[in-house]
Length: 95
Length: 95
Image (tube, rainbow over all chains, first blue to last red; front, side):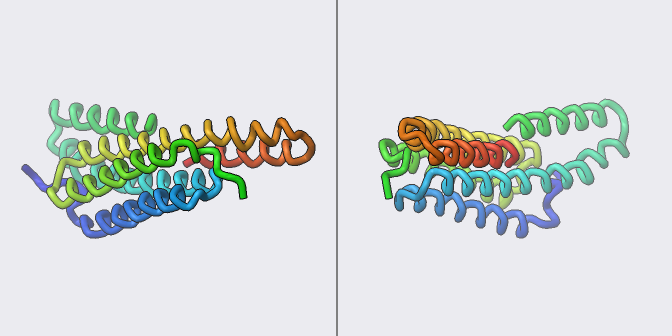
């Protein structure tokens, strides 16, 4: 197995995910404290944006490493990698 | 302060958020384990969907309690509540 496209900044990604984990814990606290619906909704939106931003960073990494390598090698692997990435991006956009 | 629209099922919401918190922790584990980018992306998409689904439940609660109450009382409060909810939904859709 080759290293994943994000291996150069695993620590940064994990730090961002740890912060998102804290945001989700914060949401539970807001509900425990009976905070106003709109305030909770805004925090959910912020958490979703943070997650999407991590996803976009991973998409970029994947393109510039895994997909770019496959393109350089050419052949059927190239088309397969591009189709796979496109399908994953579609699932992300729909999420 | 009146009870928030979701007060009838705080426990269910908190249980769902606890599960989402676990998903975010799982994402950190996937990165620690060098899992393939596309698999991580799919897990991020699933986590985002779970968060959006909690948000939609809260929107429904907010409409059927806070907004519905304001509509029953009428006056400027009604328009304000509807505008506030619409703006929060717009932030959610953009997130």
